[in-house]
Amino acid sequence: MSTRLYGSRRLRREHLLEIAAYGFEAVEVIAARAHFDFHNEAAVADLQQWLAEGGLELHNVAVPAPAAADETAKALFIARRIPLNVLIVQATTPRETAKAVEKLAALAQPLGVTIAIDSASMPPIGSVAHFVDAGVDAAIGVCLDAAEAQKGGDLVDAIEMVAEHLKAVRIPVESAAGGIDWPSALTTIQKVGYDGALMFDGLARGSTKETLARAKAAREKMERWLTST
Image 1 (cartoon, rainbow, N blue to C red):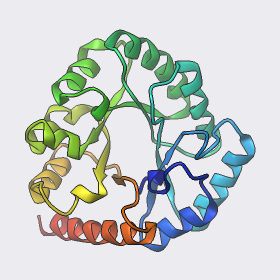
Image 2 (image 1 turned 180 degrees about the vertical axis):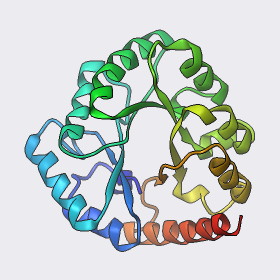
Image 3 (image 1 turned 120 degrees about the horizontal axis):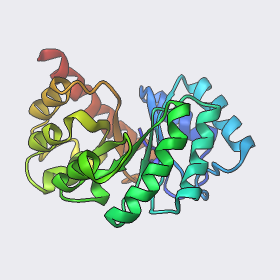
Image 4 (image 1 turned 45 degrees about the vertical axis):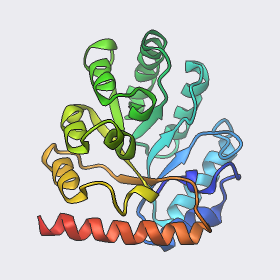
């Protein structure tokens, strides 16, 4: 579950424990300083403790808007203390994005972190697939936004297009219940070998508990589809 659920509010211990209470095992933290001050060593230490209390894995950290590489690189400070799989960044122009992610990838590699482009920031899906294949001189990946990919065509085709670069998958909470052939999409995600988290993402509609309840119901339905394949 992404902490985007809590909007621009300062991330607090009770938020992560609330996510854990609904059975989620991994989180994405939004690296916006008004939400989580990733520059602050004490804030990172608090996050480490809260994750441990909730039994949560930090799967993604997402920088929510295009930012200078030096500023984005500070989000990697988190990985010096807390194991982190993926740092998700937003694309700008291909040239500027290539320059930024090449620098970030060099810093991330010793920390065991993969830099991934948010597919929603470089539509259509073919553009981000081509970019990570040939437009950048670094090993980077793709964070697939399922709802955005579906808008551009077929989600199954999109998954296959970015298969070898797939490092994170976002499922907007309100799209999880319908509009997408989820059994086919989930089967394809398994087929291409993606074994990371499927991250529910989105602002709360109603209370955060109501949104978490809907996400939990969607997750349980997806789990049944996965076990029946």
